[in-house]
Length: 224
Image 1 (cartoon, rainbow, N blue to C red):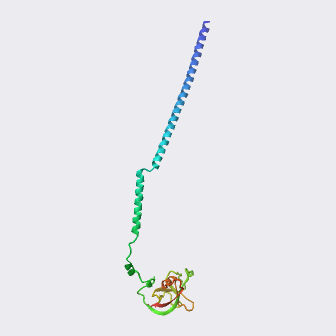
Image 2 (cartoon, one colour):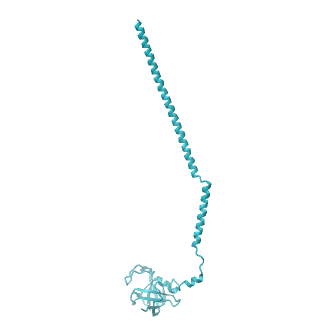
Image 3 (cartoon, rainbow, N blue to C red):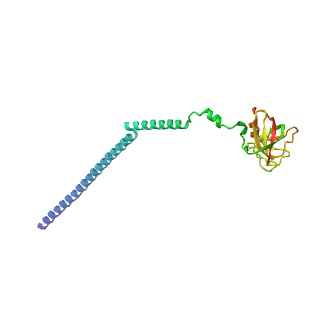
């Protein structure tokens, strides 16, 4: 009987101790969960606050950088004024001073000598007077002449039935004194009553009326 009481007492003590231990473990777990939750919440709050602070700082920086200061405005205005001044000076420097009309008149060559082949050292002898001359149509540009050279209406060349290729011919308009010197590179003209054909450029330097298609001239041939 005595042993039964002792056994019962030990069983009771063990049960109580076990219950107390389980309760303590549960309490510790709950406490750990609470502490972990509090730490997590605190960290999240701190992170949010830091993110908001960084965002405000970035926004403030953007606003500060986007908004020009008074000093920047003044610097920009000064730069515009300097640029405008430089532009005016550049334009002024490009404008030449008024030329001396007397000096220009003295320096300007006689209109009658405006010819790429003109050479004061050349000597010419009379060939024919009061003969008819005309000029090439632009449709002949780029085509081969009788000499094999491509025709160019902006040069000083001519077509004649007999003159050797390369012959220099002086053609003078007696009505205004203008003349041109051309080189024979083609054969023609084959129209009766016309002595020689020349390029459009050479012809236009002889006439006053640019709408005319024919002209009476005097012809001289280079005397070699």
